[in-house]
Length: 316
Image (tube, rainbow, N blue to C red; front, top):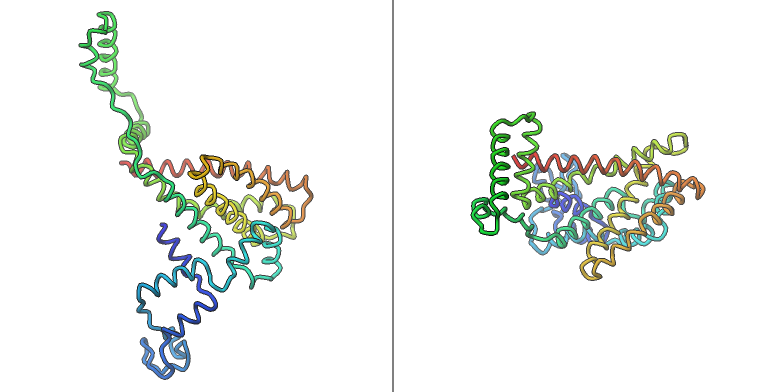
């Protein structure tokens, strides 16, 4: 999934770098279209609409195009980030009011920040997960001179009861399925958490519609705001949280955990963003923030349970 995010992020081509790339790879005027063989009169074929460009790339050009997409050499990303951090309400209001050319599109910004989060997480995540320690051999325990005869008898009786329960299980099919998957996850935690990590990248895309739905319900009586407004706010807000989370993940090993204190900036940023975008009072903003937090907590719980279910299902 990270590769998919990289592909989407790399699709953002801009300004000067795009001009240089096309200048180097665009077919000359008058050369035949590779699709319909019509002589080209410009960069696009006027007969079939195909781009008259040589898509064969050297490794250098491919790397350059990826960085072009991520960092957008025309400067919109770098003009957008300071405003997103310091004046989030103004950024969203400007976009909703039509002042969009100077800033990177919200969806593209969200995808880039999401990519940064997962890249930072992959760097910080330990490669190996400790497996649970094996239980001591019962035979060794029973034959130990430190075990009294009474304890030995009690252990044997307990083992006999466990064996009898195992031979006559009174479990529903669902309980048996769950127990088997949990046991498999305990025995192979690396595989289980690998599935969780892979699917978390897919589940992350559900954050935007979930946030948009919650905001639509919170502002249901504010007729001047539309679902589109809430969607843009959600994309900007989630992008800011992604940028903050990336910084925390990268700084945490260096600061010995002190970077986690930066997370207190999240509600402060959300307050300024919501109030600046919707123009509500301080009390009204706090009330709506509380409702958004409660709804988000419930939504996160559902997503986490879904991730665990997917992970357990993959352990079969």
